[in-house]
Amino acid sequence: MSPVLVLVGPMGVGKSTVGHLLAERLGVGYRDTDDDIVAAEGRTIADIFVDEGEPAFRAIEKRAVHSAVTGHDGVLALGGGAVLDADTRALLAGQRVVYLSMDVEEAVRRTGLGVARPLLAVNPRKQWRELMEARRHLYEEVATAVVPTDGRTPEEVAEAALDAL
Ligand code: S3P
Image (cartoon, rainbow, N blue to C red):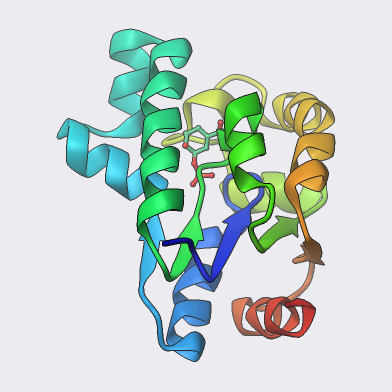
């Protein structure tokens, strides 16, 4: 079993909103690895970061991504940092992967001060820039299509993603 399509991209880019629209349009189910982790762990992602730190979260995330990529046949959205793991990137080879991109200013606007997002709590603009510098090439590496989201509604992004398939 493998997903019809996998969505990757930074937090706040709209993977969940666009993913639900795509699942509806394609008549398939929607799954999100962040939701899987929260359900399995019985606590929020922010709590996992605070209680155990980022490396422990990444290990949990890696298992969640592996099980979703091998066990789901609909639309699958991955957490923004899932592509940091080399095994995860290898697992995505051969999948249809859409990278939803946005520029830093749009990112700051959409995620605000990152209250629920532990990676953006201190200086959102600077942290966004660093995050994207570290990750942009990883998103591009796994992507079979790149769909910019700046200035587009979720419906327009979903349409562009379908066109790109
Ligand atoms: C993260 C993105 C979040 C969540 C966690 C870490 C990241 O997922 O997995 O807070 O490292 O970019 P979303 O991209 O779904 O917000």
